[in-house]
Image (tube, rainbow, N blue to C red; front, side):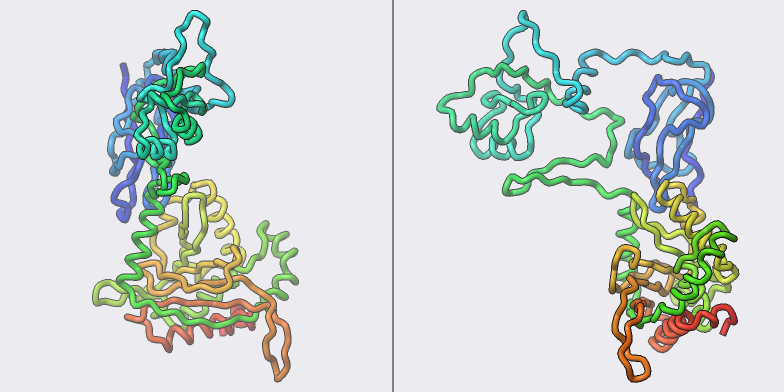
Length: 432
């Protein structure tokens, strides 16, 4: 026997531990080199762990949902194992799985004539939460109620029918449900748990993912430790829209990516950060750290929650480089392919809630940064120009900042600088 170990990859310094999501193979099953064995979720990203060699999965050292550390052993592979060497699952276990997971496609087999008539639901029968609550309140036991649900499950109407009867329910012709099997060790730790509310209506209790829990922790930390204040301004995006409409076709033809609005927003932020470096600074205890670079985080929604990949040295990037990088971030965030390095650091963040229709908000600072720009939906609104009311595509900008190190003057002037740059895009090209 030749054993190869499967270990947790090296995590970044800012990630203390990770959680195993769900094993995609069982012990005894064949695996191929580079085949994904399991996904590991950190507070920043989800990593796929491939098999290091061909063979048979010899052992699983850590179950689904377990907290693991860098370089920790989680499984072993027997590279000399025979394909298909795993024992066949008992038929009874297979039948239970079919009844529970695919009742519509594979109903429980009808008892043969020689089999004894099934009694009412057994004490171990699975009960729906509302039925269980009603039974507890009425003093009924599982043996007094015939389950008519899928696989013999006891439903609320079953309990009501039993209560209306003057005597215990007679044995049902429906086959009794097997006792609910204990969850296997490999059951996903984050599985939703049905619970009953006070009025019997169904609810679900779902544990937070590690990513969601970490986001919640950081946001509460930000609210608790920062003196957050938000300043607002409205921006007329007509000049940007006109410039974009004029050059979008030639831009896409040359660079292979659409000319969006985010590159303008990033450039406007860089323009303001150059003039007011304190907005790009961070707090470390009683020290202020001025960063000689501009790493701008772009908040991106993903199926697993909010992530903030970082545009490194955004002040040195062209419009095309920004658009290409953001498009790449969005695609890989959706597929869960962002790396830990891409989600680490950042000196300033831009959150564009306008893509979802947000009109107004106060963004929360992403610590240890000291400021964040919130962008919203662009809407045609009446504004006054030269004594006349005209309709312009307006957008509300909101910048939240840490008042411990950023005074209102710098925050307001930085936001005005962004506004002026977007209302006169030539400033971005001439660095004025």
